[in-house]
Length: 332
Image 1: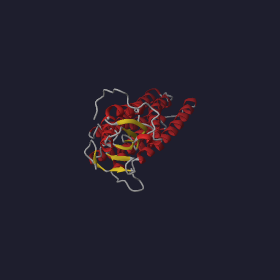
Image 2 (image 1 turned 90 degrees about the vertical axis):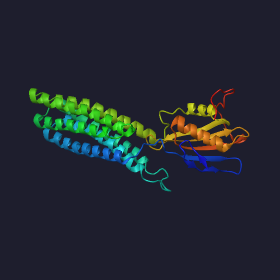
Image 3 (image 1 turned 90 degrees about the horizontal axis):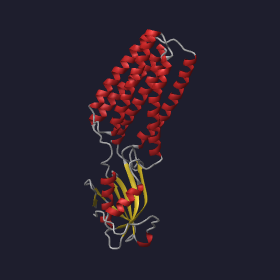
């Protein structure tokens, strides 16, 4: 048995009597923390946000306000962010199976991708409507619009305060709080539009401000699309440099002569995994080297799940520069 930096025991699997070995680590200590309190808090915020989003759509249709409908679209981005956070908690608790060895964590990313595409389509529709209303202004009932916009502002403030009670260090909750802060601006814009129409009767301000709200939706939707697509394509996490990782292992791990075939990807947001091949020097202890590599991956790069394959002699194929001569780095 081998023991990684987090204190979990993992079996080391040797393939070949004396030539090839691999060690699979399953320390998910860097994955998002799942607590019942976080899950309940996010679910409550999600219900409030989604519920008022529907009310705002109805209010926008009845009052004729495109700004309210656009603000409801931005509340949809809030609901998506909260829904993904809740999905991360809910599905993160489900055990892996023989057919789904990573469990259901990828559902969170897939849902993010689908919702991002939906939001972009919503942006296109509202932009089309805004142009039409600027060319041919339509009447807006300022009174009902103002009431709905003020209620939306109150709901957003309430959701933000609810989220502050949760674990604000959690990346998904941080993202949801930022979405809600953005929606506060959308509610303020709708209030300004309603007040302007009420006192001046100038209805073009409604589609103009709806376009400004669209910019908030577009920013959130594009970021969600880009991040979810990157994970689905198994791209390298943005905070990890493959070449820096390879050189770090060469310099810091005793007995390693070459590191090659390095692949790093994310199972879901905040849960990176890695595989690599390491050639070791004659006489080096393969299990000790494997443990040291996994420790460095976990402590230095936040990679809690890794598979390390050890090779010897002529099996190693390192087209890249091997360990620098005379390296003065700290060694394990």
